[in-house]
Image 1 (tube, rainbow, N blue to C red):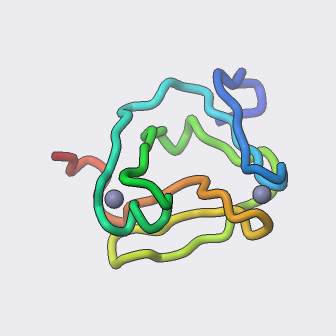
Image 2 (cartoon, rainbow, N blue to C red):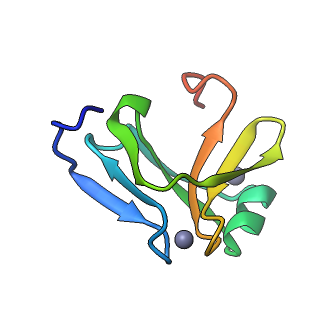
Length: 96
Ligand SMILES: [Zn+2]
Ligand SMILES: [Zn+2]
């Protein structure tokens, strides 16, 4: 994403240390009921919006990361703990 690209969505963590901008609509929106998502969110399920890497940028701060399993890494604000992003290390094309 270049600086000239107008974001269609911005967001951030609870304390404001981490901010992000998205320049394209999500490729997919989903929820996950797996045990690790339940623990990470403290809820029955977690919701996700898949964004292409080139359409996403951190605009303030950088999140810390926790590797919750062999296939997933979960980003969060190190100051307030807000979950911010999740990356699967498996091929993103292999969606079921
Ligand atoms: Zn924060
Ligand atoms: Zn999950």
